[in-house]
Structure formats: C-alpha cells, structure tokens
Image 1 (cartoon, one colour):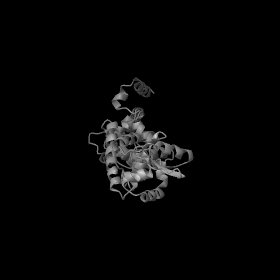
Image 2 (cartoon, rainbow, N blue to C red):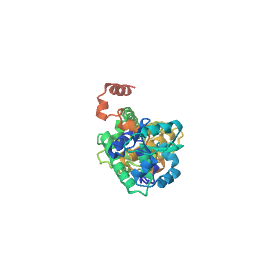
Image 3 (cartoon, rainbow, N blue to C red):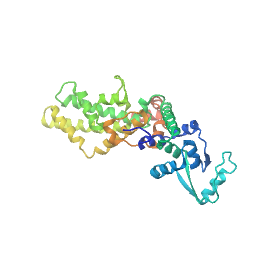
Image 4 (tube, rainbow, N blue to C red):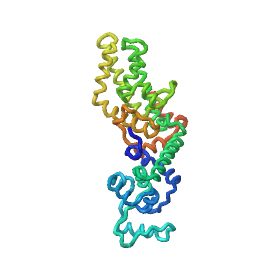
Amino acid sequence: MNKDLTTSQVARKNILNNPYALSELETNLAVGGKNFAGETVFTKMQVAEILAVDERTIDRYLSGHNDELENSGYRILKGKALRKLRLAYVDDMNVVDISPKTPSLGIFSFRALLNLAMLITESDRAKAIRSRMLDIVIDVIAEKSGGHTKYVNQRDPDYLPAAFLEESYRKQFTDALRDHLQMGNHKYAVYTDRVYQAVFCENAMEYKQILRLADKDKTRETMYTEVLKAIASFEHGLAVQLKTKAEALGRKLAPAELDTLINEAEKNPFLQPSIEDARVRMASRDLGFRDALHEKLEHYLQSVPAGDYERFLGERSRSLEEQLSDIQVLNVLKRLKDR
C-alpha cells in the first residue's frame, strides 16, 4: 500500500474524513480564507497564492481530479450565490477582485484546499503543507485516543459487550478442543492461529508484529468489535461441529478431520459477510488509526469513514476504565453473563 498522499486516495481520505484533524489543521495552518455560508472558502486566485502555483496548474488538477475535489467541497457559484460571495469580500482587507461581469466562479472549501495540497507535486509549499498535515494528524489521533492507539479499539461503545461474548464462545471452543480433538496441548495455539488465518489471513505472531505488540500483550484486547464477532461466530460453529461429529463417531477427531471442518467453514456463505466485514475494518482502521499495514489484507483497504472517527475519538468514545465505571454498561455485562 502506497501511503504517499500524492498518489493514494485512501490516505488522502483518511485525513479529509477526520473532523478533529481538520479542525486542528485549520487553526494550525492559518491560511486565511473567507467565511461564507458557514464555512471557510478560497477563490482560485487565493489558492494559487497559498500553494505557490499558477492558476493554470490548479485548472489542470481540477480537470484530472474533478470528482475527488468536488467531493471535498470545490464548487462553482453562479447567480445569487455568486452575488452573496461578492458582498462577503466587500471591504475585506485582503481584497479579491470578483468582477460583476464574471458569470461563475469556482471556490474551494478548506477541505478542498487540503485535498489539492495533497495532490500537487510541483509545489514546495504544498509539500511543506503535506508534511505538517501528517504530523498534526498523528498528534490529534494520539491525543484523542489518550496516547494509546494500541487500544483505540476499546474506545468503541460496543467493544465491551462484544469482548465479553467472544470470551464466552472462546471457552466453548477450547473446551471442544480439550474434549473432542486427539492432539497434545499445543492444539490450542495451533487452532487459534487457524481461526485467525481463516478470519483475517494472519496468525497471532504476524498480527503482533504488524501492530508492534509486546509478547505479553493479548491480541484480542486490540481487536475491533466486528473482528471479535467474526472470530466468535467461527469458533462457536467449529465447537458445535467438533462436538457433534466426535459424538456421532464415538471418538475424538484427528487434526486432519478438524482441518476439513475449518476448510468448509471458510467457504460457508453464512460466515462470509462477517468475515469480509472484519477484514475491511481491520485493514482500514489499523492503517488509519495505528499506521499499521496488513499486507495480506491490502485488497480490503478502504478509507476510514467520518463516523469511525467519532466512534473511536469523539465524545461517544470512552476509555475502558470509564466504560467499566458506568452502571449501565455493567448492567449490560451482567445480563450477558446471566443469559
């Protein structure tokens, strides 16, 4: 995965979709602009000055990346909207001459300005803005996550119930391995890896290396809700099948027989949607929040949606300690325990 902002649309969107980073960038970069219709906007002439390029360069990028820049807030004003913009610039100390004869005018939102700065390769000013941008985004994510991106997954309000249920299904799976699989005690590590590989294509060691986890760190404590649910579904199904087949045969299963069950489960159409979703979430969020690339999941990479930044960094998100002190959360966990 190329994380160069000038060539990776996913990397660009991961910045533009982060409202906390955008707010900090607007304050820190202090590039000016004009408040219009509730947001900061810039004319093409202003953008050319900020990025130290000529307007023809901007036109070329508008032509080559029109859809992306429009999605970021570039738009063309005409009629009444254009007249209002002219009035907004009246008596401005930094006068921008918008002729009354101009039938239309393209304007950039602050978001579109950043998007253009991430695209332009001919400008040292744009390159400097990109560098500053990446530093600020990293700082914002670290600050909002309490300095521990390793456990940013635990800030999800749905994490604790999912982790609690997953642990319950995990116990069923390990019990089934204990009682119905003819293999030494290393079977628990071997088949934990087989489940991980089935769900997200990596074993435990590979996963730890990618997230730069210590040996003592528990992998599942760093996994997102959707990943835990996919693992729980996979392990629960295997536990039931392992027990059922062993009882039907009147003996413990051999490893090869369990391998067959796992191979069949990997192709199960009922499990595929949750597995696909887990792969997308893990690959995309780990790159966006943890700067960790899962090369085996590169095909599943998407930009992190704006809602995820609110989910993991916003006011709804809370540290695990805060969640555990909430009586409502504790009541939910008690109900799950008593189910």
